[in-house]
Amino acid sequence: MLGAMTPATSAKQLLTTDTVDGRTARATRTNDAVVDAWLSLIEAGDLRPGARRIAERAGVSLRSVFHHFEDLETLYATAAERQLRRLSGSPLSTDGSMVERIERFAEERSRRLEAVTPVRRAAVLNEPFSPALAGRLRWSRERARDEVERMFQVELSALKPAARREVLAALAAAAEWSMWEALRVHQGLSVPQAQRVMKRMIAALLAGLSTKDTKGRSA
Image (cartoon, rainbow, N blue to C red; front, side, top):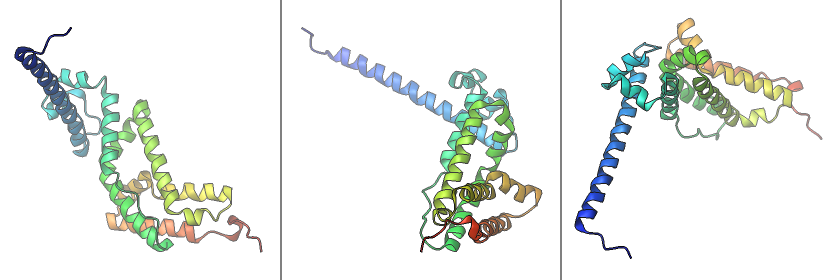
């Protein structure tokens, strides 16, 4: 039969629990500091910071970086995922006219694209060398396309399958980060100007559908 717990045993167990909890909290703080350091370096323009730079910015040892992350690829993937989740908001309402939905969608999408630009530049730069980052970016692009499809389901559902695929691909491309980067950097447009161009492209794609693209209606 087990004996009753003595005060000494109880105190020892509490001390062990506190020690474990303390270690977990410190590990979490270090993990967060490393990820935040990577993000801050990226946002400052250092698109491929090394482990030593990351450790210096985080205020931790170089060993700590690799203790919490197997390699820089794992760190990049974790940081990219955190950024994506940080910028993800509530689903946009699909109510209203096509014009109202275009306005709502373009305003929110341009806000996200502008905010994610520093990290996305780094992610695209490292994508060919990082399967983990490539996977995160693929997921992000698919999610962005799904949002476009949900937002303009009314217009897309009236199209024949082949036309629907093509129009959806065109809409997704018009609202993709690569297009936003082209407008902001290569075309030299301001955020409001780039947003207006996005609205024009989406409106033109949806308003310019020919009758051959739509499903036949039985009388």
